[in-house]
Length: 384
Image (cartoon, rainbow, N blue to C red; front, top):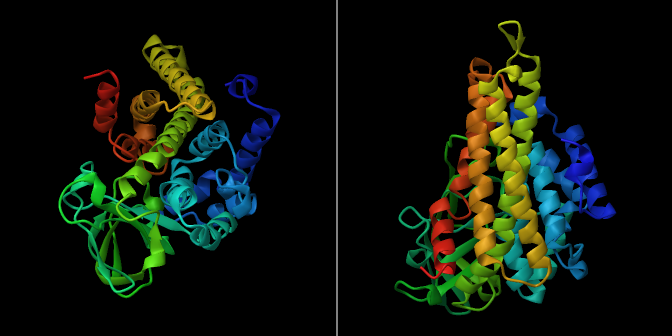
């Protein structure tokens, strides 16, 4: 893809950011390192720190806490670049900075922001979000992990599951019930030191994203002071909703970037792999698959960047954002599936990158609100 086409409409600073982050990751996280980390199931600590050292962790945080107060379009540019390099580093960034850290940035007390945000920016603190439970994933209103008042604090009891990178997190952002019973008005959020007595974390073996492995987290009589609450008591649902615009935009941008990586990878193979005396890309059965991938990618990218511009304009594009998240992550998976078919045996064996991209892409339609939940949101926006 022509670089001028990729950067059309971006400011000079955004073009420089894109080039900078791709150059940085090519140095600290080359393909051989990615394969090794994936096989070992190790978090990309060196790349995380390199992104922090370059200032990228603070992109969306206020200047007064060490951030850059970046725009939503800035985030889309960065998210796309991270997704293009490797889905695992895109997710690693998002887990600390957006899924968990954005709750501190948007809703934390001034003291909590001053304590946590500069450490995230410096790379000295990794976070993880603990939301889903064994019996409650999409049904957030039904979560059961309880936070009961005790003198000047709270006591947490319950479980969380599918918590990406919790095993390498210094602190966990835990969504809990402070008012018994079902309903969105009894949800609160807490910052929990992962080393506290009563906190235990068990890694889960997942199909993909081995460098940001999922976890099962247990909280048994975990005592917290009141100042560990993020935002007001029983206001956690509103806090979660405010963060969704940022989260969904980032996930869409990650999906767009990773789709482009898959296309570039498979296109190179199709131009050099010969069968029946010519490159396989010259066969219509292959070229049309690649054309379909290009159509999907261009459409997903246009929608994602449009959502970023709408957010920067002060709009609340709930429907458009749900469209972007659902479509971009579905396109990512479809492109991986088509890429696997084009590369055939070369894509299927484990010492090639295609199988990893295939495995890693599938979670996009599950995490951050399933494709089904996005369609529920879209249907509501349509008055259904």
